[in-house]
Image 1 (cartoon, rainbow, N blue to C red):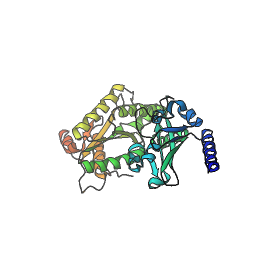
Image 2: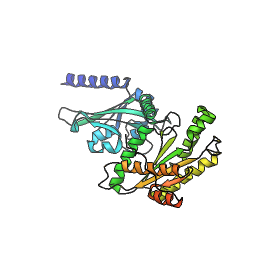
Image 3: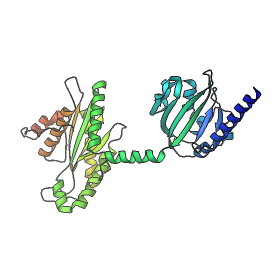
Image 4: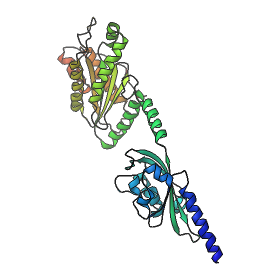
Length: 345
């Protein structure tokens, strides 16, 4: 019996030494969630020495600024239902069985820089099925994650202006339309078009045309100030803004701010048939979706018609879809045929 006990002690000692020298960052907690092993690779990854955490439950301080459970803690507590609360990416590999895996950004207070870590945590049980430890291993995926984010940004950004591209606009519009249907709050849309842009290119050249578009894009972007606002380059010299929770009056104020700010840039135009400076025409629409609205095509069409009216009424103006007829009447004109309505991609 003594020989068997000695063999177990030797095996345990060997396992601890092996874990200490693993190249994979690893730590182990006991059932009371106190750290019993914090290997050298974990010290290198976190900047936290084993002496700072062994025997304590302060392992969270290596990864976060405010107290919260690590993945190993959730395994020890057998709390798979808490995974979504703490991790955007996660998987539970069996109830009280094989443990959990997850990914998230960690602030790494000792390092002073964030790391994106892939985390695996699994329980260790004795022969009677009692939990005796939880092992957590870590992989640094920061470089891969940043590359993935950069590729994703490239796929949704316009190369010339840096604004969101048409693909991102279409996705955002569908999402915000669905949210407006649920909340029964208005969704506003602006179409912003640079007046006489072809004439500008002919007069000043395409390089100056690109510089003009970048300047206008910067103005448009500055007016997308709320978290859910989206400024995008819709195509060519046309920009679009999605403005959730704004009625037509509020959206018109934003539109007028954009138009005035571009006027203040005083970008020289001077081509025959155009004014002295670059101006904008803006079409505005706002709508609260109801059960008869299958998608945002009605909103797109209304904003497009308002922009068309702004062009026909002399450019360099903001027209709201709700007041198109009144604007034509005020100018002594008759309503003109509407353009072909845009549809979502």
